Amino acid sequence: MANDRAVSIVSHFSEIKRRIIRIAIVVILSTIISFIFYQPISKFVQKPALDALSKISPDIPATLVFLDVFEGWSAIARLSVLVGFSLAFPYIMFELVMFLRPGLTKSERKYLYSLIPGGTILFFIGVAFAYYILIPPAVHFLFSFGSDIATPTPRIGSYISLMSSLVFWMGLIFQIPIIMFLLGKAGLLKSKWVSKQRVWNILFGFILGAIITPTFDPVTQTLAALPAIFLFEIGLLLVKITEKKRK
Image 1 (cartoon, rainbow, N blue to C red):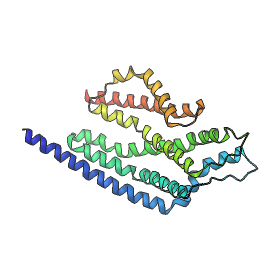
Image 2: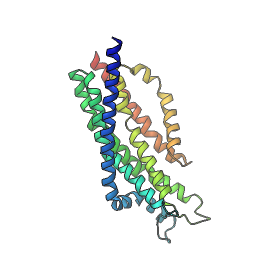
Image 3: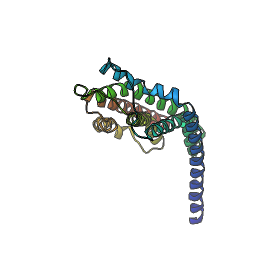
Image 4: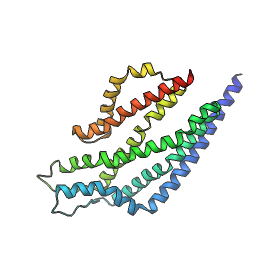
């Protein structure tokens, strides 16, 4: 009995290792493709920063600079990895679903398969939210702070680092309903208990917003917190649905 359990554990670890290797290969290939097309990607990514600079200093050409020998290279590499990971995300969801699939019934697998498009769509909604809603006010606040005593000349490396962090974390935050659905389906999360955590969820949302945003203005932090709070409610609804299906 103990030997069978040990063999099962080893088998699971071997499968996890194979799936991680396949995911790594897909991410690397996606990163290489992103690196090849870094110029149009970089122009698109820089737009919020350049728009903010144009509003703050309309008489000065808006531009980002690099001051270190390797800063331009590291910024492009970081951007390529971010885009590569984003492009590979549907495949990452596929591998996750295929790993969970064997232990489920036929009806449960039907719900599981929906997580691939569902998780992918939510991830890219999170990315779009970060790019169009979160980043513009964040960079405008950061660039304008102190612009009355000096001309803002942001470095490309620090901007790409900020943008990558916000995009990555917002993409993951938008997976909250998926995580709650899986936990509810497994019976590890109960809607009654989750409902009692609303106050803590609001507090956690604002703490999370403060952590992932480097600014001190309440507007940007609130914009980062609201999705987490809203997605918690969607997750709660999904948990309730899983409980009804179980009955």
